[in-house]
Image 1 (tube, one colour):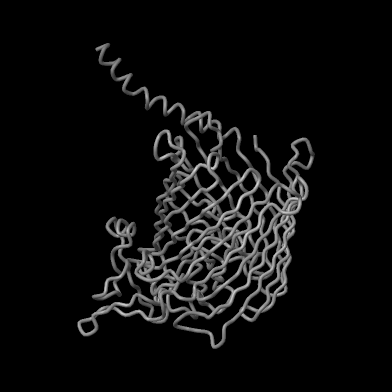
Image 2: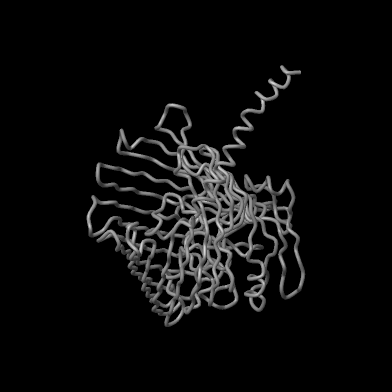
Length: 496
């Protein structure tokens, strides 16, 4: 009996040790929780200028005059390499005026991580991959422009070695399922104009990125990967006829969303893809010397399968150049991007028939869909905000005018330890959509300037206080002229 008990104890040792380490991680997280209180107000002459609204994880508005009081409590301890287990969490909400809702539950999540693998459940703000977080216009698939989508997600958030002793080849990725939270907003916003809205829509996302190179030994580093997402399930409500279309759900449908399989009830004999499937191929090549770096990148967006590989030429995409100069007080980063979405594999979509045995997979209609209300959450594009939010049209429709070309420039600097700035300018020329083209192309120019003052010295009585002043101006004939000012004041610190 004693031998049996000893064997059982030895077998349970790894699980007991892991349980104790997880308990220790939870204790550490409670002892070092961070708080944030933030007050923001925006005043505009018309609608909110683009860069006072965009890439704020959806905690923003196009109404022109808006604001919020935001309170957050969070803990993330990923940099603590002395422990294998990590626990994280966040409760982050805002009381808002002029937004699509008066109460915004911005983040609510819990994470459990073991070494380089992390499991997260809930809504969490996440950065875009291979894009400058402050200067880029944003990724086309997984951007920072819309409210976070609640999901169960497993990931390796940082690059890990594919081979034990090889620092030249690394990988990271994620896999998740979730659901959209804007059904009530959709119903209220589109009830008088749009022909449909969606309830109970589900979300699937995955991505994998490969990193080739070691900048400590060779200046060139390549990064590239595939991002894919699907909207599926739920119910399509047709407003005028008061009818409903139940979309396929269940485990089988969820599995088909992984590889873009299945079909919709309206496809008939011409199966396409179940739900709304989209994604991006993204590539980056950087060259780094001791005190400066230059990086070029490409983001190729696709809808369904037509541009997933090379069935059609890749005429659309976002191309960017990022320059990091030697340390100076004038500027610390410069970004230029060109984006084109005008082709979309052409305007014609035709399925193969017995009399015409040729298929033409055109009419990709980026960010829009025939059943779901496109790649948006709470009216904001989930990807790049140069696909201007349909809320700017203020006509009760959530359809994107998606054929455009644009130039975008961003520059940032830090003259002092406390003071930093950034400047953004974007110009777009928009043709509408293939189905509903503008009589004449419409233009939009968006200018943005921001000053940030924050006290980081822990000995200062103002430590943790931060003030940001943003000024934006939109011109052109697409959405009219608008001038806006935004002031944000925040206080951060450690709770215990």
